Image (cartoon, rainbow, N blue to C red):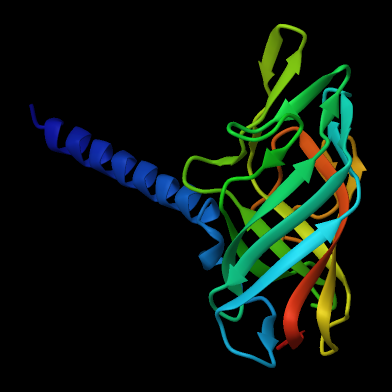
Length: 224
């Protein structure tokens, strides 16, 4: 009978440790707003809208499948100097003899969910920078269905995506940015972490190779 308080104490301690562990996991999976500050745009004030256009897209999967889209584009708004929202669009998407399409779109057209945007540094030295694209609360980056004759297969993209801005460099002014998505192995992006550490931001089992030119209405400078 005298052991019950000790048992209760041990149980309470265990629950407390479990709660702390859960909170730690939540912190690791926190949205992009919890990230270390990335570069900010200077030369104007938010909101700042943009559009982008690009050539073909290669989609590689960890399963070994490779398929492609013939063109790419995007649009969005920086609602602060380092965060915003946007979408990416890929057209002419074909997988084998079929097409891959998002709901409500013409055959072969994929449109992402409305994504969160955050400017980020890609290396510890903060010499490289880019954009982190995060999905809504559902975790669905893009809804996709691929059709083969009468057969349809769901191939949703879940997770996040990081693209590098290769031009201009930091502290250089331009009204255009070159945004590059690249893979290092099938299904794995070149950049999956912010400043080479912390949570991994990656589409599940999928990687995209694509280059887009992002256009702004006036000169801006990413820095600081």
